Length: 499
Image 1 (cartoon, rainbow, N blue to C red):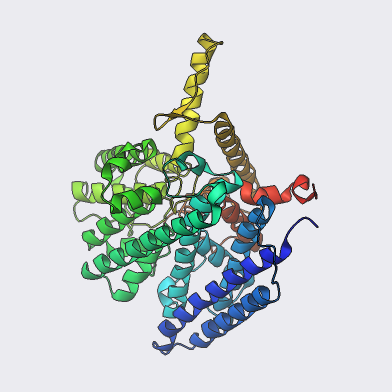
Image 2 (cartoon, rainbow, N blue to C red):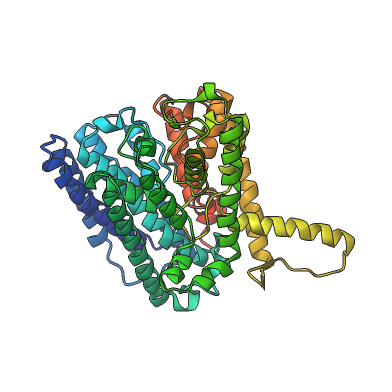
């Protein structure tokens, strides 16, 4: 413990809390001008959070500003925890979500951009609380981009080491200027995308309040909606659903590629192997689901959340298949239709998609497409090596050979991910869930997806879970969001040794 620079950790946590409190102040006017009594609870939460932040920041001045790897891991994990602990204050102090287990679940689901909810009547919630709920997504999404592109590679984790050659930053020898430069550009892209979607949703028929909330939830691939039926509420406005689909696709794309796209370098975007797999994979799976909806869907399985004007209508099938596939792959979790009602085969496909994830360096969660590419290529090489045992054949990605250490990192990540999923599924049955629901809740929480299968399907939520199950799912959301190793390394004895 003595080797850790605790003061610099506390100062970072202080900055995190101050910024979090400032966002609460932004949520306050939404309640105040709607004459909601909850406004003062939101304001008090902001004051308390900023006060905690100032205490942590000003009482921990230090001349040593160097951040080593150990401090980095602690700052990332504790930063997310302090966001979640202070972030639940608006719910608790306003009385909107009165219990700590529920408030913490909703909050960490927001920051981790999972989108799972314990709210049974979202539309009855105060506007200030709904805005704060969407803001937790937006803060978490922005934090994740900077984390995965600027910080995690320096800690030696995450799939982003592969992007270091092309990314506008960072490298360990030019840490501060490159990270700052990268972060500023990414923040700007993030804000531009949010306002662009807000404007398009507004002109497409949404109210301005719903438009800003859905824009924040889409760009962060979060999935909290202001409507009980999620985006299925707008089934009568197809253009709204197409806009959200497009922005989910963009948000699930590596933000470095979004930067190139905005600069007009589309050739660089399509040169990315991961982007091609990601885009054409979504298109291909959508095609399969469209066929299932049009030809194999049981008309008796129709539900109120998915009602085509004409059964088998092709536009309906394409729109909802594309929307739901994109929503699950990018781990956004918006719902336009209940995919569990599209045949058992369709449900199986969507469950498999829980383990894909979007692109590395995007706001989406999950395993990430790049890891699947590397694992598949490495597996095929093992067949070649079986025939040619003395040949040295490297794994190639984007035309370059991949360092063997990165391949091992990705393989160990996937093994640990699947082990945690299996153990989590079994543990959730211990907390009272049936096996199908336990599989769904574990996969959804670990992959930061939102809707799942069983009793946590797209038309249900997590309100019926026991408090123990909610705390456990909250932990899964945190470790899934922070790429497993970042959090799990804190539980190893060698992390806390001085040398």
